[in-house]
Image 1 (cartoon, rainbow, N blue to C red):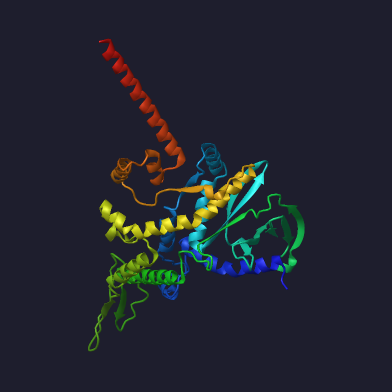
Image 2: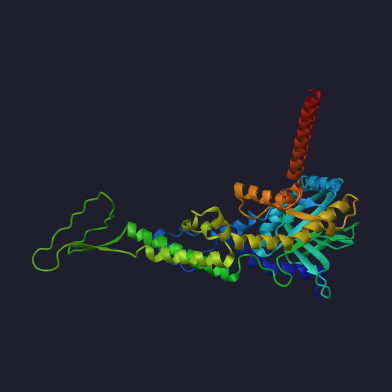
Length: 426
């Protein structure tokens, strides 16, 4: 029977090859399929041509999935949460967490308490694993983190009551030896597991999406081969005399001796390649399929949709906005759990259900449209502060607007009082 370390180690090991592949696509250097031999013949073994659309599918969501802070409904607690959000670098770590979720379908955030101050770190999902209770699948049983440093291998197992630290000289389960056990005074696993789904770990780059990306890169590499042969077409020399190893290029003169007597005369034939339209049109078609299946606005992939009016742009981006809104709702509970945990580290017990996440509005909001929206909300009787919060403004911006409005109201009251005083004196 396997122990906890072996169970988590094998689970981590099994997912690493897939995650490595997904990160290759997301980082813009996928392995080419189908066209490698043809590229090598045309350009040599160092040739590599690929469209960076896997990264684009991730980036368009990531750029709109921005956590701006937390709102606990209490000014003093909000101030503390704002300070924690910035001092721990959570604003930066949140982007790493969301990127891991979009690429692999899961992410891990670890919280530490060093010298009386909380610290948070996003960890590569290829280094971490979470094991849940088989009977209660939402209850964390323990977490694993594995890394290598200086030729040594390390594993930490995090339990609600303790942290076990292992070390090994070689990387296989039986080589790890327990070096230290630390107590966990908070009785909580300080590892937070974000997932896109409770039943399947799946990011934006599904198997179907990867097949489309492979087809796009195959067509694109074939396009480059065809372009090479169109620019430098193959030439065939027909002559009884050997013309030698002639390198044909621009501004070069070639003399071939004619044939004496009967027979085929000296001749040069030029062999043309395929029209580049044969590749450009299928590429555009695949780009449309990719945009439809992933919810990526088409104007990100093709220039044909770039000249859009404000309303048309919002309509085209509506699937993307819906997807980002769904992810905000999906990830918020874990972020609320993180915020409540950080407060407990500072001795403040606050129910995570009373904490809400403040997200940046994912819609492309033009200044005129934004101003009109706020005006409509205010006309409907919605307080300005609430309207700004609905528009995705963070607490710092809201407080600044509120302070400036209070100052403006006070100045208006002073001006009105002075005017009334002068009127009475007259």
